[in-house]
Length: 342
Image (tube, rainbow, N blue to C red; front, side, top):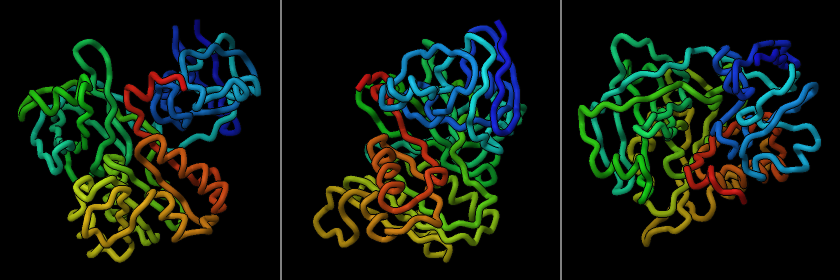
């Protein structure tokens, strides 16, 4: 069956095919809807069903509660239409700008700046015009058909024909065990992308708060590279949270960028500070709130563990006056996160 989907207030329409979710059909048709994990775990795609009927696939209650569903809210990533539908959702200019491609990619280089972090540089096929926006992600397609998502850590201009990925080892993880055990240079992996609506809104003049935890630094790094490349003069402050100093695996790189570029301020924050650490300590989003108790005029870009992103979203909006619409997030949902029902 094919159904017509209308997105308001933009007035965009597109059609689903077969067993499409609302989001899958939007991506295929180049309609930019907000989304993150595509697995019903993060809630980034939450929208309001104005007309029509949908059936939801598996999703987490924290992403869409029973009360929200009863009130007409839907997760476009796992809602399949049963009729023509009208959805109220903000469209994201640029989210559907580049075609989603499946293509082979070769490991060009692999560095380990921390014992549990690998920085992969992947060479893209020369005959594929793979384009993306800084902050978007790709999915690796494993041999059994399962997928693993990683944000690109470079802006397109900085590594032409290549992408950089930051991968943290999750012991027992199907993909990361392979990366840290058997993967070597020149190996070929299959991937699909670009995906995601997490990238710099370049039409705004608002000062920017960048919030990263762990390898959530990857897409934040890409956004920083992009902002510097276009000559942005918007004040930017990066808060990078980690447990130990070694977890700030590109500390020297970002400290150097901040030293050279007056627009950017860098504030590292450790939750389990090493002896001799003289910097900030505690929860990274609390450090932001201490420095910026009033965020009414700011934009926030947050990426990392779901608990960090969710806490920041809740507290920045409730306690610091951040407009809900100015919080942009990419929660790093692991496979364990995606299959938790709590």
